[in-house]
Length: 383
Image (cartoon, rainbow, N blue to C red):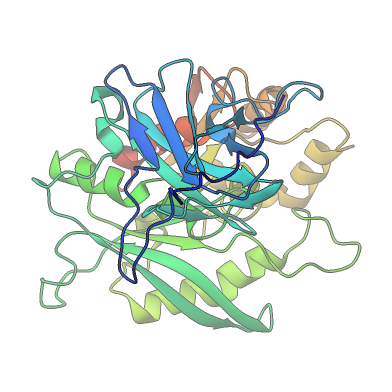
């Protein structure tokens, strides 16, 4: 049963701060020594408050399958402060979460880390530890810069947004160095903000570069979504590819110090971004010689003759890809709901003689996997 709000005591004690610049005297997310996590939020008038996080559904249930609990129920003290502590430790990593206050999703009011989805926003927290060190900010390494750009897309007929990582030293080399470029695309639930927030792309790459494990590169994180059009499938349309090839790549090459050569250009993506990469990267060896596909494949159940249609449409390009590509990296979790697409996708690689590296990990369709795929993929680029 949900915990219902209690009346505020007569003495007026409240979790709300008083005074114009007063700060609350509680911590909204506290990682305990045993790696359990306590969440707190001040909501004196609320009747039902929960913590939700799709990133750790085994610790914070999300109502799947139907009939199972949704979120962690919080309890309220006599000041109106709600709190709950996870029953199990949370592994060292980065996580998105929100509060549900009387049914409304609310980002952490005291949060300082956030990540945009396709719509809406998530709060974030990190659990420190050796297993997550590859994605944690380190004061002892040089750091790149993530910028937000807006460019005009003739293909779409609208302004478009992207995030761009420039590596350490880009701002300080007097404009003399040019850099290879990775186009890195998010999934269907996320946005062009996601890879540099919850994805930790910039921090992972900073750490790899500092360790001498990855080349300095520019990373362009496009908006994988295009305006919705009636009766047009989310993935089976050319809008994203037209924007990428006709508008975004020329914009980046004209505004950043890039090496305009397929040997110095890569494309990768997760889930929907992996589908974009299969459709627009793997089939364009004239543009990209390095390809990464995370948690996506061809031959999804109910997709009809998707594999046959893909081969028929892209036969010449796939034959050329077999000759020109320097890397195809393919990664999938054993528990991923798209794991069934691995065999038909690898079958295409084998049919066309496209050499590839296959990384089958534990786990499923999660950022926990995607961050690690990126950390394994990036050092292989532009070698």
